[in-house]
Structure formats: structure tokens, C-alpha cells
Length: 193
Image 1 (tube, one colour):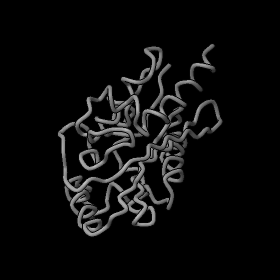
Image 2 (cartoon, one colour):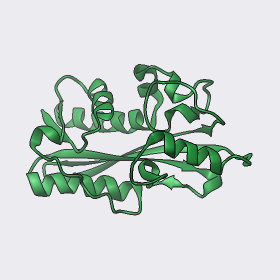
Image 3 (spheres, helix red, strand yellow):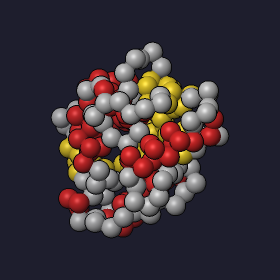
């Protein structure tokens, strides 16, 4: 089964292809000729996932899934949330985003945060949502070189290392995206039985 993943983020595509069974081939937006930036104008993480999935299905006619992920920080009332990728500006620079967040939390004792991923799947004319949440905290400095986004400053509950210190395999077993993708895979496996 081929499924379009509404993303051109090579890290995300690699991460998800490693998680799905071999019977599912993940196809990128680039591979279907979609090179435009799909607007992410919803004010929720769920809303953006739905917007992206619907865009591909309506404009290109493919079954597809799209995800949106946000980092929600307790002390910032859930910010950066839906604006996580462009928190420090439209250049979408991970280091700028982390620097801004660390600066805003400088004098804050409550450093609780969670990553939330929502996957919207459009398949056979129906839409299903899958959600993954991992709780943790924001540490005070960047540590690690793996991963992407806010991984160098996020430590999941029950762990000592940041997401950026974990291998892709270790991160995938516990991450928000890993949880949502597992739900997606279980759903797809039931369909193919």
C-alpha cells in the first residue's frame, strides 16, 4: 500500500518509514509533485493536521496522512504549541526557537512541557485522527546532536537524556510521534487483515 505523507521534512519521513511495516510505502509530497507550502493556518495542532491531509486529498486525489506537532510548555500557557516551528519567526530556525524558549523560561521554576502529535489520515473517503503525547521538561541548555526541532532541550519523564541524545530507534519507541504512528499502524493493520 502506498500512502502519501503530507510532508517534505526528510527527518520526519525517515522516522515514520522506519516505524511502519514494509507493506506500507511512504510517499513524500515531492514525489507526487506537490512542491508548494501547504498553509498551516489553523489555531490548533489537530486543525493543522486536518488542513494538510485535506489539501493533498482534495488537490491531488491521494489517500494520505499528515501530522502536526507542537511543544506545549505549562509555564507559557501551552505556547509555543501550534507555532512551535516558527516560534522565533518565519525563518523556522530550530536554534532561534530554542534560544527564545530558553530565554522565556530563564527565571521559571515550572519547566514542565509536553510534545503533542496529531496525525490526520484520509483513507477511502474517511478521516481518522491519532494523537500521541509525551510529557517531560525543558532543561536549561541544549544537549545532544540527534533529532531535530526542540529535541536538545526536552527530557521525557523517566529519562535522563534529551531527545537529541537518544538514537532514532530509542526516540521512536517513546516519542509523541512514535505513539501516534503506532496508533496509525494498528489501524492500517486491522484494515489490511
